[in-house]
Length: 347
Image 1 (tube, rainbow, N blue to C red):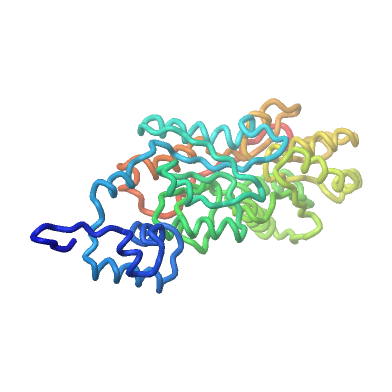
Image 2 (image 1 turned 180 degrees about the horizontal axis):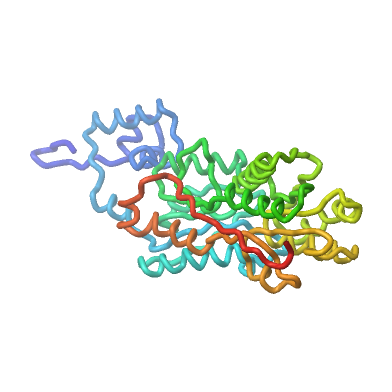
C-alpha cells in the first residue's frame, strides 16, 4: 500500500499484473502457489508485488482457504463392472466412510475414466474437496504427473493399495509379499512343486509384490522359477476364466499341480473354466486365491485365500488425512498392514 494525500492507497492485483507484464490470473496463481508456473514468471510477479508493496486482502485470503467439507475418493470407472459390489472397493469405501463421518466430512466420489483427464489438483483449486484418497491408482506416466502436482502444491492425499516406491507419497498398503509367499509355501507343503501363478497387471505395486512373494517361496524350497507358469489377468473373473484356458491341458497332464491367483475373482473364473474341463479344485489341482472376499466363502468347494484388511486400510487412509491425532502421530510415509492365509477346501 502507498500513501496518497495522507491516506493509504490499496494496491490491486491488476497493478501487480501490469508491472510484471502478466495476467491477473497469473498473479493469483503465483501468490497462492497454485498451478505450474515458470520460475522466471514467478520471480517477476514476486518482485513486482514487492516494489508496489502489495498486501493481499485478508478477507479474500480467508475466503480462498474455506473448507468444502468433502473428502474426494477417486475411483476407476470400469465398464460393465458393478464397482460397489466388488469386495475390494466396498470394504475400503466403508472404512473411509466411517472415519469421514466421525470427523465431520462427506464423501465425494469421483470416477476416473481410463483415458480421461487426471487433473486431481483441479479438485482442490475449485474447492470441491479438502483431501483426496485414490483407489486403483496405476504406475503410468499421466498418473505420476498428476500425483507429482498434488505433492508439489501441498494438497493432502493418500494412496490405498498402491505405492510409488521412488516417491514419498502417503499410502496405506498391505503386506502382499508376505501374503503371497505364505500362500505358495502352503501349496508347496501340500505337495505341489509345479505351481502356476495368475497375476494382475504390473502397473499395480500389489501385483509386483505378489510376484515377488511367489518367487521367494519357490526359491526357499529350491524350485526353479519358470516364466511360462506365470500368466497375467486384470483382476476380473473373466480374465481368470481366460487364463484357465491355457492351464486346463497342463493340469490334466500333470504339468501343473496347483494355481495361485492374485485375487479371488480370478480364482473363481479359473474354477469355472476348469470345472467345464472336468477338473475339480482340491482333487485334480490345488487352488489359492487372494482377498478373502465374500465369494471365496460361498464357492463350492470353498476357496483357500489370503485375507487382506481392506476395511482397516480405508479407515487408516482417511484417519491419516482427517484425524489430527493420527496425523500428528504419523511416523512413516507408508503404512503396511498384515495379511493372513486362510486354508479352505480348494487346497
